[in-house]
Length: 431
Ligand SMILES: *Cc1c(COP(=O)(O)O)cnc(C)c1O
Image (cartoon, rainbow, N blue to C red; front, side, top):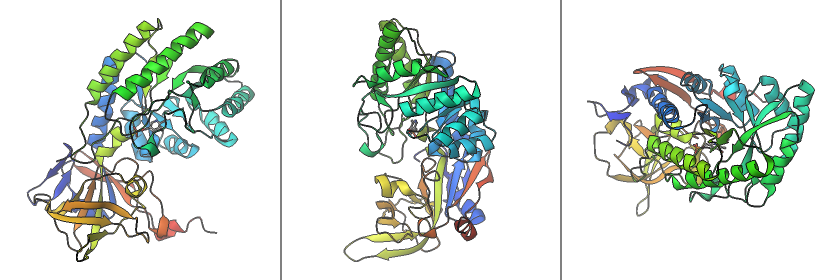
């Protein structure tokens, strides 16, 4: 099996966290998001224990909210001792509603409106990650009006191409995010923010991309950021307290993806950072990282029910399911590969090549093309593996397809975390 939390029981059914997926489909209906909380927690602990072992004290992994945002996830993250990064006031509202300790929250976004800035300051968010000058100005004046100094990091772009999918790589100079080091604009930005009396500048942030399996893009980014920190330290006498290296460790979606050792990678990044700081004669800053995908992706799967199996003679076989790009947008958006199984016959060797299609009125609404599964029939349950990240989070209601429920599994017990959207919910905003 692709991940150690997946298995097959005596009836030949796929299990996750030891729980029969067909029983879950029967109890809650499909489509259904399933999150294995034990796996989720063990993913958190890989980061928290590696940070405790290898990183300077005060360093912390932050969960990237955008990968999965619901109340339940924040209680898990909070109880595992992680911080979080938030990209919008909506995520902030959700974290706050879940009782998340907002001092451990870092507020991102390349266009924070005046209302967003005021809301985040008023909520007591720990840190802003300032993207641009206009934001710095507004934050400074609002903090002044409240009589506070707001802690902040600056988002910088180190100019690294992490050799990943162009649509999800953001650390290059040409980016809507942050300010480029290479062009000299980052230096000007720092000098400017250091002159703002109600911003308490604590360090720098960068994020180079996503689904990265190699450690080199991270150490390259760290080199650029630390050399720059050393340069700023010399020229302005300002040494950053924090360096945030963003998210991006890759996850195994299909057999051909590698399985990376995150503990070993964090150790290597840490050693690399110490060496580079020594070379620059600067103290080692506290390190932050923002894993999203590598915390939640492999803890999740999605269950669907097959409606039809259509064999177009001489062409393709289409298996249509009761979900769609609405609950599984990444395949349609990024052509992302996923592993698909006939969940009721997980003990049989798959030999039926087919394209698994969603129910939307779009020919591009394909969950996965040309996958090999055990030939299904109407009523069979199909599982799409490793859907814990960027599925619920990116779900939409195109074609007025209601979004699935989400169930969490802990110690073999299931509980509803997000209820299924109803037709009435779909119309709730119509006046
Ligand atoms: C997307 C993103 C993350 C999370 O990336 P993953 O690949 O899910 O780990 C973290 N930080 C920032 C700024 C991001 O844009």
